[in-house]
Image (cartoon, rainbow, N blue to C red; front, side, top):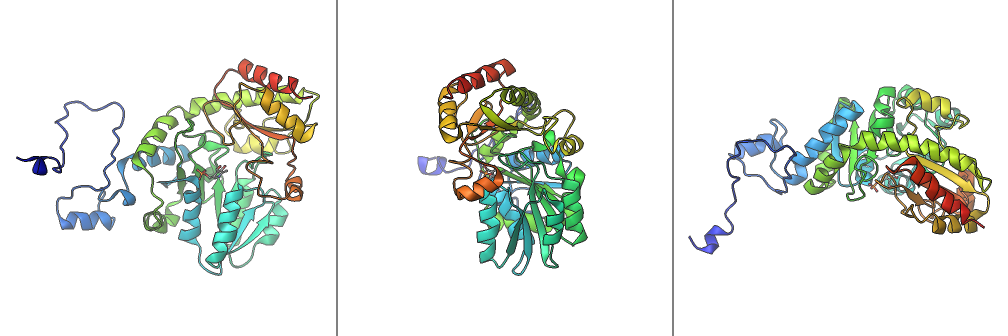
Length: 391
Ligand SMILES: Cc1ncc(COP(=O)(O)O)c(C=O)c1O
């Protein structure tokens, strides 16, 4: 045979007498089908199987199955990014004329998505402090179809009362979507408290190795009919290699998050003892306003890996702290293997005016800490070096 005929011929795997102990990666964009009927049945969802990567692939299904189990969900799907996972309910569940209630402390891009992109589709939004249950109830309209909240809000780590929000949404015929990125299912499972859909940026703690961008959407069977078609038609599907990496990352999520949560409490208590620190925000602290709620909703003794604090000296103090805390990279994301720092004023909340930031309690001196897997002593010493650099 000539190279013309050898090169393009599909390769077959050698016969395998044993099973690989870690899952293979299936990068195939398209699969060989037995017959047009088989392809038709698979593409129509009548039988399980893979035809075209955008419609589904084994690495996404493997990861989705693990996430579905962790969340106790009926169904789960993996998307190309966390933002794609948030776009899915907007496009799958809402139509022109529908109204959405958005938490005022939601991730900035989530607000942009529902408010600006939603407006182009004729969807109206009200932005409400969803920690204020009376205000949330008052914002419900007959046209309200969706309420969106975060389990733990960025950056001051207020906790949403998921059961109460679900009750408000359901009483008005709406659904509750919870962004659980800051908590992860190791700390909180919003579906257990009545949420209808949960999304997470898998980019963060569940993958935990800062090497993929991926999203998760999971929830109740009854809402699932339009989710798969939206992921395929809008092109939100994920890459097999990214799913494979995240399937590896998720294997250690429980250990990383449990350890990080315990050390986050140590860090919060240490920061609180410093005269340079005006305030520390961590739901694991007994005097945090949401501590009792967090205790009820979160897994025992786990309050998450995120801690925020405000330095008395404002922006100059924050700059000096970040320069001085050399062993904690300034890395404006979260949920990494190593502890990282972020500065909301100049990163996650830079699109807001200073008045808007002040209304959320964010100043130039506010710093957000994402606690990784280092020892508590290492983290405390790194924080001490940062504090010692503050004039
Ligand atoms: C709370 C929260 N939700 C959603 C997202 C979006 O996720 P991704 O960056 O994976 O698109 C982020 C990203 O920072 C986030 O912090």
